[in-house]
Length: 91
Image (cartoon, helix red, strand yellow):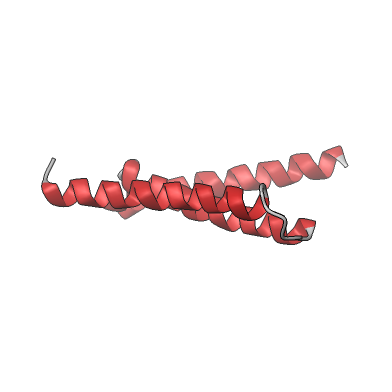
């Protein structure tokens, strides 16, 4: 592993660590009053950023062919659609 890629992976790791810590401090262990929607929205934004960093760098999707990226995006969209359908049928 080259020195540049080691620095990149270390920076991504630190960014993930900061995002997880920020999520905990802001929405779990704080005395700041957030509404449910604000806490849920903030948590989802931080989780989305963390997921994109993991998929792009640690799963090397950033350097793959675009067709594989589109297949992964389609799988994510279909999973979300299935979850929405399951939620609708439960309630």
